[in-house]
Length: 290
Ligand code: Q46
Ligand code: ZN
Image 1 (tube, helix red, strand yellow):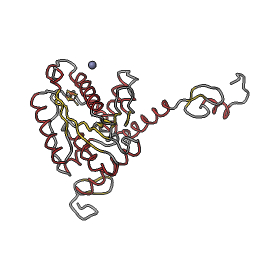
Image 2: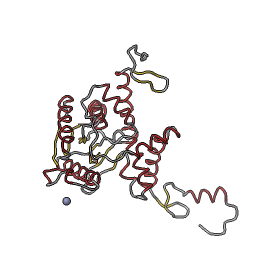
Image 3: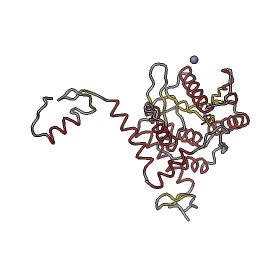
Image 4: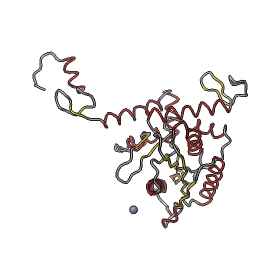
């Protein structure tokens, strides 16, 4: 099959076939649109992009580098060597090669500098690892004067976390999953430029551009059952992922801009609360004064 430009196609999306070049262009414009839609990165910002060497973070950093001028940002990379045997060695090598090829300044922090590695952790390695990564990214970014830390979370990662958190009754989570979290106190702003982009789209971009990446899974990676569930639901309810991602952003906006209702004084995100609007719309005889 042929792309509209006449070259050999590598992918069909909707009714259209895409060649490598046209696919890459489409991918970049999707990432750019998502960054602008949610205000994920701001003009003039120094961005520290966390890169593990996996397809998602590799796609993110390459896309940000290409969009640097358009978005008016400056991108540098941070790799954290977690000390997970051969996997960490290979990850660091891949990141060095990639950043060298793309001309991106790379900083490497080794977890063992802090006195332990993830190999030392027997139980709940991912939770210790996640905490260590967040700690190092934030501290490094703040100390080195970066405005924002960007991570390569893709759409499926975020939706899988929504489901997981709902299941375990953790209702304090939604803020962490948003496409952008503004910095406060000693926290630097956090950004997810691939908020709306799926992992398969990332992989195809990485392959189209022949970018260096590490296909190996972390040996400590948990059972991917939550992510698999996202695929199952998406198949049954097309558009499910997008729906969840968009309502997550809406939900937070409603919570973020609370004010007092002009009529009754109760908290609301609009001038007049929904209840007062309903009273006006449906009420006949008002027994309780508002
Ligand atoms: S690196 Fe760390 Fe992941 Fe490996 S130990 Fe778990 S959290 S799986 S993204
Ligand atoms: Zn401390």
